[in-house]
Amino acid sequence: MRAQGIELSEQAIHSCVASGLSVFQEDIDTGLSECSDGSFDFVILNQTFQQVRRPVFVLKEALRVGRKTIVGFPNFVNASARFQLFFRGKVPVTNALPYEWYDTPNLHFLSISDFTEYCHSRSIEIDDSVFIGKNKKVRLLPNLLAEIGIFLLQSK
Image (cartoon, rainbow, N blue to C red; front, side, top):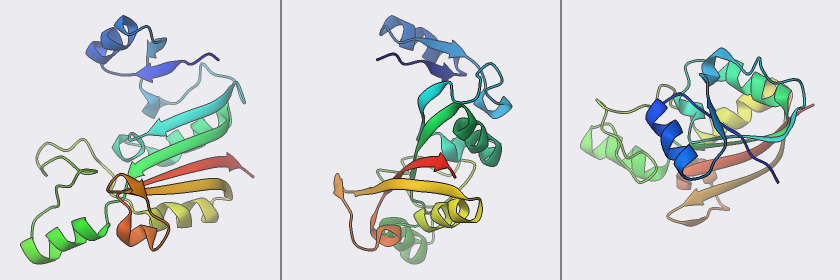
């Protein structure tokens, strides 16, 4: 098996190379123009999708160059976040959302329901999904109880 990563931060690139990982410097927001259609079995966007400036474009590019795409992101509307917003009146800080409002890298605040609805409206096939909350799978009411959603996607 062979893997290749994309990273923007020079410091993170040095760290990856020091760990023996193959990585090149590129801004995923500008696309994957160096990659041909279907050139990868999987493209993984884990904990990055909510941080890119152009998520629609990034997902389209990932689906173009990968036969399958895995997207994982924090569910910004889980019960813990809702509780903090409602009772504390403050932007939530949770295990899945560990940043204060002033230093978060997150640009897009999405829920599991938002993402599922988006995929259906764009004819993106969800092959599988798993939802995680408090280090265990969530099977019931994932939009409320899960902290993280992970989706296996492909173009229809």
